Structure formats: structure tokens, C-alpha cells
Image (cartoon, rainbow, N blue to C red; front, side, top):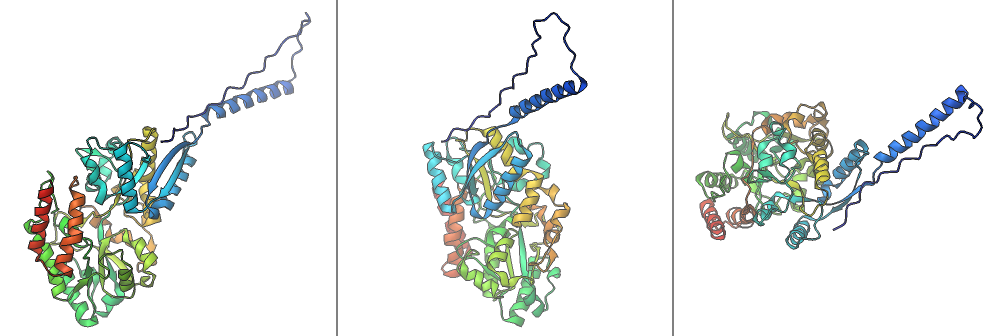
Length: 455
């Protein structure tokens, strides 16, 4: 681990000492111009000395990040150095692939050497570190304790354990629906009339009947939209105490509901299995279906990989189970940025992390640069977010969905969460929707048995 460079203070410039002559004659008084010159010289020396006091060598940090976030982080580093000239930092920012980043970080923290100061940790891996005798991340609780009412609490809870916050979220991760307006108009569907999931199903039947295309798709190697709908209905895979509830009645009913979508022809299995597949990109880009249920952050992926959808894709809130329900959306996915316990300058690191991701300006910039919904609710009224996005029907995207984000549910995180995510992605979704070898109840009962046996 590198040693952090110390702040350098310049030495005070020596003041000139006027020495009188040995003559007993009266000293000659300096002229006004000479006095002014001497004063200016002395002030210049003082200014130089003062500048030398505040000059500092940049403090070195290392940061393993997600490649898609690298440009955003660089902009925040530049902004920090501009606003904090007395505390400059130099960050060795390295983008590392998800699985590679996870395995390298795990080894470095287990061996006690080689870990970066900062690291992006995906939510699917976060719970692994709760199994350590001592959690290897610096607590960030004090950074938010005076502003807790400004954050989506459930989002902070995703990166918290035993009352301590260990990771800074990147975005709210709240789910929305991306509607292909070309298909909706052909089917005669008014997307603003879709309020409940039953409305969504009714619209889906119209789409299938009039266009011959499915309304949506269900993943078979990942969890969308199953997990999103589970959370929105107030359920989860674990309760607050860490007990396995993955096979509870609510979750079984939701999985059966999704299965009925496929049986009725309003949904198909997602080409390639997940929303990250090139097969899916091509399918959706070519107007293959009417709607996609994903978090708001998926906007950037749509713009990059599905350019032909530009101008006929509208964003609306996630439908609800019933009007007036407790949760209107769900926080899924996401990355928490941590400070590892191998960081030598932890206080400065925390200052920067707050500036980079937790502050008001950071949340605003994250939306403007990455399209990520702010997890600070006080940013939602900022005029900078009220911009029309040409790609998305030239509408004010955030204005369309902001109200639904206020009551978003999120997971109860614990050391077993990564295992649950893996089982649902690799077994439950595949066996129910792709292979057809299990009923929803059978698949979830099997998942519960596996998780309970591994506790």
C-alpha cells in the first residue's frame, strides 16, 4: 500500500532587516515613494509566505470503479480540486470488470493487503463482506446522520448493516416502464391510462392482438421484473431479521402472475436471457415488444445500444398493484462505493466521497451525466432535472416519474443475499419460464430449502 504524501508547508521568507549606519548623523527619512516600495515588497513577501503555507501536495488515492462511471468520477475529482485547492487529491482511477473487481477486492481484504482506497461494489456482492469478523469498510454513517430526511431511506438501508452505513449509493435504482410509443399507438393504447398491473395486462392483450407483438419480456437468467414486483408489493427474499421468506405466498403469487403473462401471449422470455444480452438489444431496438420494466438508469443503455428507439420511447411510472398502496416503485440493482479499511487517509477520503456521491450537487450531476435518478429527494425539484430528453419522446423524463420514486422499497441486505440472487437468476427464473420444469411454488420452495440449508 502506498504511503500518502504529506502536506508541504513553505517556509516563511526571511524579512529584510534594516541596519543603520555607524554615523551619529540623523538617519535620512525615506521618501514617500521609497516607503511605498518597501511596504509593497514586504506585503509581497507576506503574500508569498501565506501562499506557501496553503500550498499542498496532492494526496494520492486509488479507486477501482465501474467503467461506465469513470467519466463521472473524473468530473467530480476535477470539481473537488477546483473547490478545495488547500486539499488537492490525485486519484488513480482504474476501471475493473464486475466479477474481476469483486474477486480482486475479496482477496485483497482477506489477505490484508493490496486493496484500493475506494471501490465500487455491486449490490449482488455487498453482503459477502458482512461475513467478515470485522466489516472491512469504513463506516459512512456520520456523513448522512444530519441529512437523513433528504435521502431515500430504503436505498441507504441496502448498504447498511447493524445500523451502520458502509457504501454510498450511486442512484435511486427506482423501476419505471419504457414504452415503445410507436407500438402503443398502433394498438390504440394510451400509456397514461395504465395505472395498475391489471391495466398493464389489459393493454398488453391489445398490443398482442393488434400488432402481433408481445407487450414485454421476462428474464430467464436474471430477476427482472420478478424482484421489482416483489419489492413493490412490500415483500422480499428475506425479512428484516434475515429469515428466508423467498417462498412466501406473495412471492409465489407474483411468479404465477408473470407465468400467466407468458401463457396468455402478452410476454415472452427475454432474448439472450437478460437485459444485458446483445440478442435483447437487437430485439428491443427493432421494435420487438411494447414495454420494458427496468430501473431509470437503463436510459443510458438504451441510448447507447438501441439508438433506433430514439424519439418513440416514453418513460412512465411502474404500475401499482392497487391505488393507494404503500410502495409505488422498487429500488433494484445498484453499486455502493466503499472506503476500505486499508485506506490510510480515511477522513479526507470520507470528505471526498460525500462530495463525489452523497452531496446535493453530486446527485444532480449524476442525473445530468448518467441519467441516474437521484437518491436525495431534495434534488428532485431542481430545475436542472426538468429537461426534455429528445431520445425519450422529447419529454421531461424525471418529471414524469419523480412522484413514484418517493415510496420505493428495497431489499433487506445480509450475507445470504448474494446466494439468493444467484439461485433466483440461475434456477428459479430459468426452470419456471424457460425450461418449464417447475411450477412457481416448486421453484421457490426449492430456493428456500437451499438457502436455509446454507445458513
